[in-house]
Length: 183
Image (tube, rainbow, N blue to C red; front, side, top):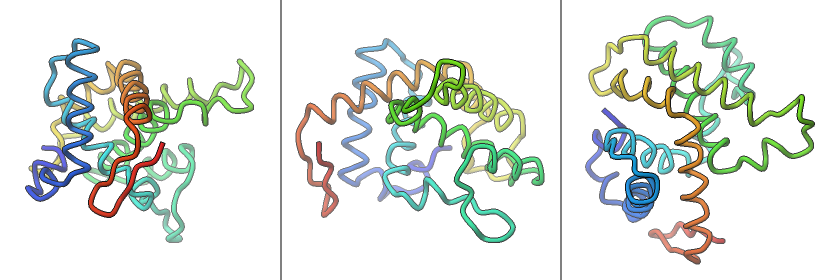
């Protein structure tokens, strides 16, 4: 179960409705993706990652936020069960968000041999596959099948997120109850 399904107020927020509409239009109408669970997951990811504290919410044993994929991956090997699943899921979400919404940040200053974008895609696919292979104890956690589909369709989802970004940039400024998206 995705984040928005747990919190009915989350579904009614203006930012959630905006991203849900953009995601559905992009994935279903433009890309022909009729997987409503995956579309909902990507929409919820956008809503969650609007907050920077969610993007960097994973902390190491010293309490410091883990900022790199390498640090997060090493930390995941130290965890078990749901904690390991959740960390791999976060790595998948983190890499999908950056590869989809801000791919230029991953390619800035990189040579073809050292393409951070390709690395993010590889880590993202692997992390979603690993998270999907661990059955959750928490019944409100995303279903394993969704995480496995995100692994299989990672590049398509990243492309869809780039298209969503293009749409919101072309759509002008939007006010979401005190939070404004500017282009």
